Length: 209
Image 1 (cartoon, rainbow, N blue to C red):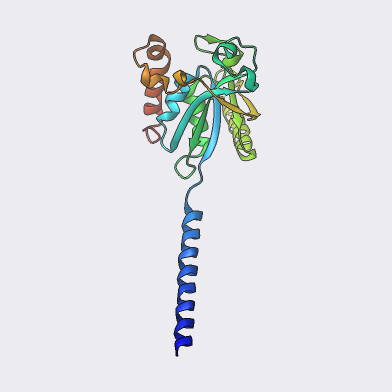
Image 2: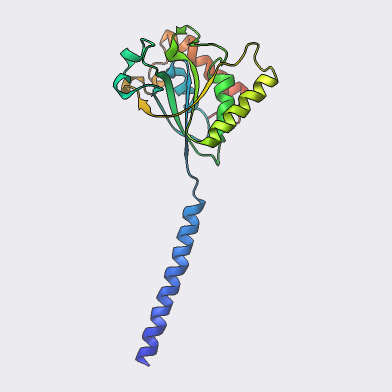
C-alpha cells in the first residue's frame, strides 16, 4: 500500500511537470521575437525621432555603420572620409509591423532616396542613403521593394539607396540620442525634422504612435 501511494504520487508529479513544462514551452514559442533593422538617410536626429513614433518599434538608437570602430566618432565621421553613414538601429516586433512597412516609412517619410551623398542641407558621404540588412530576407525584401518603386516611377529621379550587409553598428555619443525630443526648439529640428513627424501622421496614420 505504501509503495503504491509513493508510485501514484511520483507519476502524478511527473504528469504535472510534463503538463506545465509543455505549456511553458508552447508559451515561449508563441512569444514574438524582435528583429533589428538599420537605416541611414541623412542626419540621424530626424530618422531617429521618426522611427520612435512608429508602432511596433520598441527601441531606436542613433549611431554609425559602414566603417571601422576606430573612426566611429562624430568628429571623424563628419569628415565624410571614414566610410561611416549616420544611421539608426531599429528594434521592432514583426507581429506588429513588418520590415516592408518600415521600408515604406524610410522611403516616403524619413528621407529622399534620390539624393546622392547628401540629404537636405547636409552634404557628404556620411549622409548617404543605405539599408544595412541584417538577414538575407531583409536583403531580398529591400531589393524587391526598390525594384517595385523604380518600376512604378514613384520618384522623379532614380533611387540611389545602397543595400549592403551590416558588419557592425556603433552607437553614437549620448548627446545624439533622442535628440529631437530633447531639443524641439532648435531651428534645424523645426525646419528639417518636425515636418517628418507630421508626414508620418498624415501618410501612415495607422502606424503613428
